[in-house]
Image 1: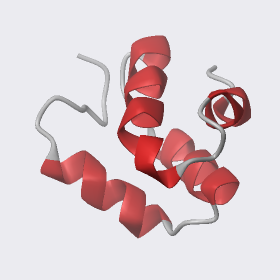
Image 2 (image 1 turned 120 degrees about the vertical axis):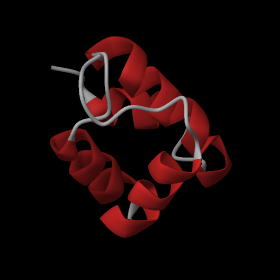
Image 3 (image 1 turned 90 degrees about the vertical axis):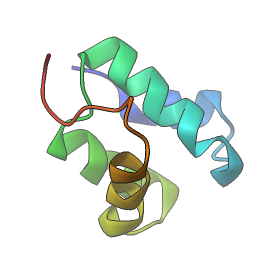
Image 4 (image 1 turned 45 degrees about the horizontal axis):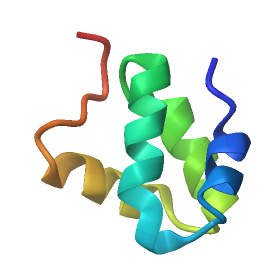
Length: 66
């Protein structure tokens, strides 16, 4: 399982790097799971809905393994 906290820290908790964080999660997990969304939202002090909004906007992110 991806360590969400280490990804967030690698990007210095910078909200402008959210796409990079999501991309890193997808590369490591093969998708951006519900638990990854929850973890990312928690570590970034954002709502899960905000993260989901980004995921649904960009077609190259997947919520389930391909």
